[in-house]
Image (cartoon, rainbow, N blue to C red; front, side, top):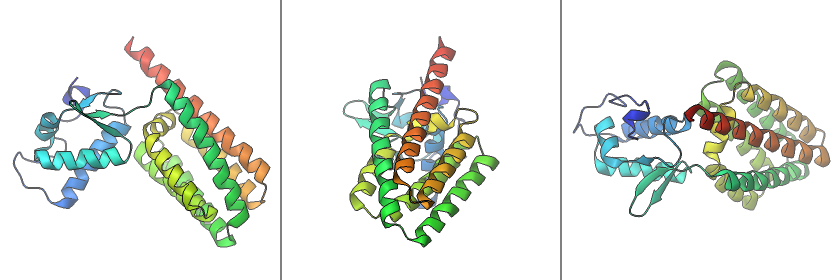
Length: 240
């Protein structure tokens, strides 16, 4: 199915064909395609045909390839030899394994935060949680904004944990599960649930309680995985 067939406007950014594009506009195209993927306007494993994207945006093949490479780095797109770019959504088995690893890494980050974080680090985490709560309250349907706010929460958590290895590993994993996270957050009510789950985690971190923090990390990831499965099942049922 073509990109246009999945609900994208005929001219994604209002650009005329052949118009030369500046870097900020290229970033706009990246953002527009990122948002379209995260809002599931494309099917899992759907091809992103360069020619069609050129027609939609009015930019060169070189620019489209740069955009696709950028999205590949974010874990949203996979470049397949002889096939091109496809929307990269892990299957059920891989998703379960990724969530299991994510729970382990986030629990480790939480324990390290308790052991190494300063009061300033904790204050920064409280502020990051507040920003996520605001995003969930004011823009619960804006998946991209929710992901950005949640990414900031994890950035602060990892900074306080003080482990470059955990930061690198969790960063790679977060990129791989980005579409899974978007799917989970798209369930009505899930953003508000996440606010409550992360608030409980912040409280455990403030109390320097590693056992409770570990359990809360696992609880949060279990709920995220269940929400993602529910939305995936609903999507399949809607197409039957």
